Each structure stands twice: as C-alpha cells, then as structure tokens.
Image (cartoon, rainbow, N blue to C red; front, side):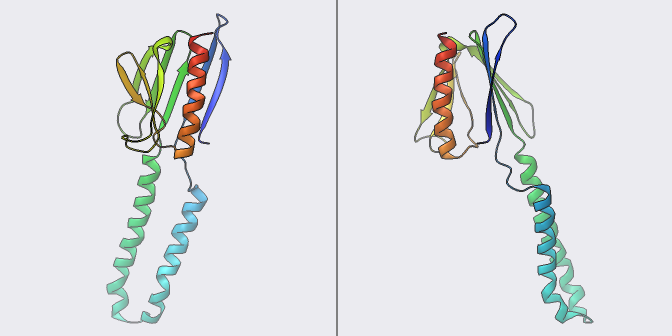
Length: 167
C-alpha cells in the first residue's frame, strides 16, 4: 500500500502517530527508458522500406513528434503524481499537510477529540471517498488510492483517531 504509519512517543510521553500517503508510481526510470527505446525502434520498422526515398524525410518529423508527445506525456504524468499527504495525530491536535506537485501546500488542523473520519460510498469524486471532519471543515484524504486501499485506510484511520482522542 502506498502509505505508512509511524508511531512515536513525544517528549512529554504522549503518543504521536504519523501517516504518509502518496500515489502509486508504476513506471520506474529504467521502465521509462525501456518504453521510449522500444517505441522508437518499433516506429522505425516501417521506415526501412522508405530508405533512400524522399518520403522518408516527409514522414520522419511526424514519427519524431509522436515520440516527443509520448515522452512529454509520461514526464508530465510523473510530475503530476508527486503528491504527498502527511497526517499527524497527537492527543491534542490532528494536522493534515498536503504537498501538491504545483502550487502551494495545503494545511488543515483541528482538535483530535472533535475529528471524525467519514467514508462516502457514493457522491464523492471516487467511490468510497474518505474525508476528515473537524474545526468546521471537511477535507479529503487519500483520494488517489485504490478503492480497496481507501476502505482499509478508513478503518485504520477511524481506529487511530478513536485511540488517540480517548487514551
């Protein structure tokens, strides 16, 4: 699962939990190079019959434009997936910090006693949408996770909030 929990004991002896969430990164750097290389050589196969003709030079820019388009789309997708959500739970405060790929970080904080985890099976942008409610606001958490991961996250989050708010 693309999230981890860490438990720690603070300086005052109080329990502290931290949850880090991130989207799946399925294409490694080696996979990117392999994909681009295979695409390039597969796209060159039809050009072997055109060697020595003027048609080769007419079609080559379009093949290179397709190669650049795929390269750009994969790199853009990789940058758009650089999201990190950090949820910090203490008996006193709950803080959610979201680092966005573009734009400023978003921050939400509330008293842990009043925070509740909510799961919206329908009506959200994704099925089984998980939110945290407290301090007069409702914020999403883990919307980029798969449906099964959001269900598991909701159960773990509900348990941790209950244990943290009522030690």
